Length: 92
Image 1 (tube, rainbow, N blue to C red):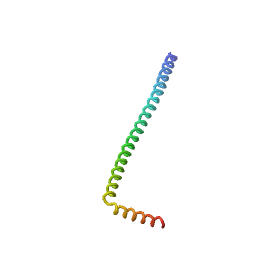
Image 2 (cartoon, rainbow, N blue to C red):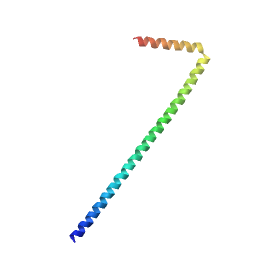
Image 3 (cartoon, one colour):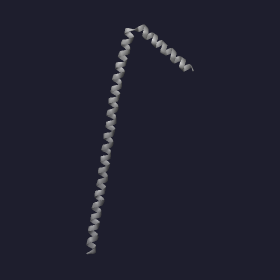
Image 4 (cartoon, rainbow, N blue to C red):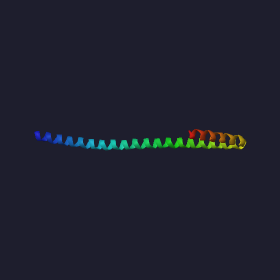
């Protein structure tokens, strides 16, 4: 009778070990999915930010081009002053 109980204990232990192995696999798959989702989320956010900055840069470039067309002499003087001040700061 004692041998029967040991056999069932071994069977139960084997079943528990198999369940633990399956659980480890499932947790590994879940972590991979979470990691993949996080990477996709970060990539999507970075892409959205890049698109936003690119669009803002294009709008700024268009505004500067319009300003230069409307006031070419004032734009030239501002560019000269900025270059002069920048060169003085870099010489120090």
